[in-house]
Length: 73
Image (cartoon, rainbow, N blue to C red; front, side, top):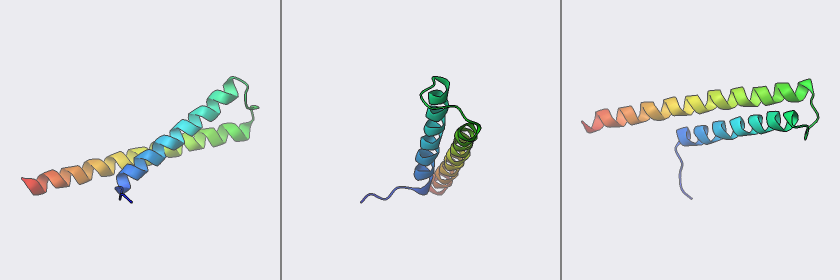
């Protein structure tokens, strides 16, 4: 099994949470899912968590690549 870097996994998880939060909000707007305050808070929380986790993964990836570039030179 291929080993994935921790940062790549964080970016994928963050992106997935963002998409799920967006889809929940979208489905509530077009009345596929019944609107409720609990679902709205859940969709917002998923989006916020996805954004934070994804940005943390991008930051970690940038740091690890910067360290790798310094070692090579």
